[in-house]
Every structure is written in C-alpha cells, then in structure tokens.
Length: 489
Ligand SMILES: Cc1ncc(COP(=O)(O)O)c(C=O)c1O
Image 1: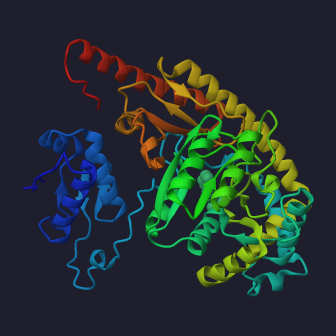
Image 2: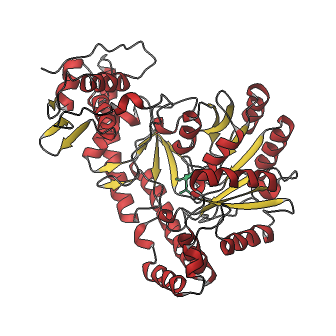
Image 3: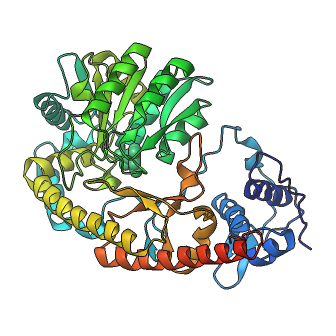
C-alpha cells in the first residue's frame, strides 16, 4: 500500500515540494522499502487530485537525490535493496537552502534547455593540434607542476594585455583566472557577502547565480529585466531602499531574456550604484556573441571609478568543459579573490589554460569565433522566425541580437511549468520560467536556448511546441467559455 499524504494548498511550500518531502520521509523511515514500486505519476496524480506534472516534479527531485530509480516501461522504484546500517546521510546534510537547479546536460529529443555552444561546431582537429603542441612544448613539465592561484602566468598575461588594450583594465586593475564565471561568482559571494546580507540581481536571472547566494543565506532581491535590460530606475530605488552589498548585472544578452542594455542605461546604472555605494559585478559572459548590430561599451570600460568587477569566460564561445573564465577588477579585490581561490582549489587546471592560450595565439580561436558567429546568426534568425510562425497568438518573445537565449511569455492561462511534460512527450524540452525567478514569477514564461541547435531542429522543435501550446490554449478557452474552471495539464 502506498501511503497518501495530506497536502496543504494554503502553504507557501509548493505542492510538489510537499509531496517530495512526504515520500522522502516514507523512504527514510522505512515505510517504503528498497525495491518497492511507487505509483505511476498519472495514478498518483489521479488519487491526489493533482496535475501529473506536479507529481513528476516531485519524482524528479527524488531521483536526483538517489532515493528513487526509474526504469523505462516498468515505473519508478525505491532505490537500494540492502539494509544500510551506516551513516544516515540525509540527516547529516546541513540545512542550507536547497538549490532547485535543472539537471545539467542534455535532455532527449530537441532540447532548448541548455545555454551551451553547439558541440558539432567544436573544431576538434584544431583543438587536438593545440593540445599536441602544448604537450610537446618546452613548458610541458612546468604546466604539470603546481601553479599560481592567479592562473597560468602566460594566459593571465595575454588576457590582461587584451583587457588593457581594450580599456577594460586600468592601472589599478588585476586579473584572476577562475574555473569559469561560475567560480568567479562564487568567490565574489564569499568575499563580499555573508548570511543575512542582501544582493540585487536581475529578475529573471541565471539559476546558478541566485542559487549560490541563496545557499549562502544571502537575501536576493530581483530587479525586473525589460527587453532593454535591467530596469534602471527600479534598480536605483532598490539600491537606496535595500542597501544591497552587490549588484550583479549582465548587460549583454542576459540569461535568460537575451536583453541588452543601451549606453545611457549602463551609464545611469553606474551612477546609481556609485551614489548608493554598491559594488557592481558585470557578468559579461555573452558579450562576444554579438551576431548583428553594434554594442555599447562594457560597464567596466564606462566605469569612472575603476570599481566595477568584470567577469568573462571562454565557455560560451568555445569548450565550456575546460572551465576557464576570468575576473578583472581592482587589484586589492583580485588579490583577496585569489586567496579564496587558493582555499577552494589551489588553482585552475593549467593544461586547459595552456591549450586555450595556444588555441588563441595560433589564430585558431579567431577562426572558430567567426564560425560561431556565423552559425549563431543563422540560429538566431531561425528561432525568431519559428517563434513568429508557431507560437500561439498573444505570445510575446524577446528579439536579441546575439547570445544564446530568448525569453517567451505565453498567453494566459498557459503555465510553462505545467506544459513541460506535454512538450517532452512531443520530444521537445525547454526551461520554464520558475527556475529563473527571483522576486516574481510569471507562469507563462520560459527560456529557449537556441545556440546549440541546428536551424532545422529549431524549426521542428518550435513547430512541436506551438502545437502543444495552441492545443492547450484552445482547450482552456473552450473550458472557460463553457463556464468550467480551466484545467491546464
Ligand atoms: C549568466 C551566466 N553566468 C555564468 C555562467 C557560468 O558560466 P561558466 O561556464 O563560465 O562557469 C553561465 C552559464 O550558463 C551564465 O549563463
């Protein structure tokens, strides 16, 4: 017998979380035994009067925790099988805020879910050649030795020179190489905030950013992002009212919206931050990926005080698996970040850094960039055309000029979270808006990451999504006009 929970609809805890917690407790206290089958999502949804997607979301978390295993065609089972008499691991974990993050990597079918470069565009032969040259080079033994927390010195010098010549780095600035932008954000969180502090983030925002502050007990306040980027007036008001320690902003092709800030907005935001004494972190991870139009100078270039910390990464242009990014900022801050980096992991992998440097210095990065920009432009045009053609009337979407993402708002009463399982059944996935929400969530919102998909896949994927959304909209409208509560499943 599968025990049924008492779910509290009036609770602030979402129903899928309550259900997840209930089943988890049943497993941990032994009421559900290892190997025992748990009901199919459809059946449990029927018994509890819930939506199937709600039950599926609870099962997904149980699976990610290793408490439940799914077998295609056979259903889901409680994991384990042998009595475990050692440490009760679940009880040992500290109650830091759980980060509800989408699973990394791809999902089957056509996936608009991941903001990553197209793998088929990786120039593998050229990359192999760069590896070979590094390994056979004079510095090979030095590269394999322990290095500096600041990064592999030749790459650091090369990046710093580029930052200086483009006016990003000034006299008083320095540069630290990190394991991608993600580590730079994590180190900045450790350096600049502590439990109870407040930070200002764009809303919606990249989940990896809000989750890392949330898991450190830092309060995140969202500033709405419009098609022209963060709402500067609102940001100024919130800086005055909330006294945040930091503002993190992505002025180019923001994730998830694709929004880009114009020059005046950048200048106004810098002025407001200076007046409020707030540290500005400029996450410029997508800045290189401009497929059309001309961009404005970066916040770091525009900054008169030299206080902005700018983050960059190779991840979106080439090889995110190498995990190489960097931070440019005031020397004292970079020195303290390097100390924290040393505590975290001593330093970043030098082989990856050396290969990337070789890849860049031999002109291979430049050729790769050209191919990526060409492919990116094609894919961007394909996704905009397909959105126009297939999304149901009343949908809105952003029209970025670069980057990897665009943001869709479906007409009411469609809920992108609830429609995801239907889309997946039709062979297409995306990330619903709830993953990105900071202070406000719009149920109809979703992110389409297009850069990793060929134009034909983009067209086919959006055609399928369009069918799912349109069908559901028609069903909801028919139910409404018949006077029934709209049943969105
Ligand atoms: C806005 C933003 N910041 C940071 C990251 C992490 O990037 P990296 O691979 O450089 O750590 C991502 C990756 O998707 C991102 O979109």
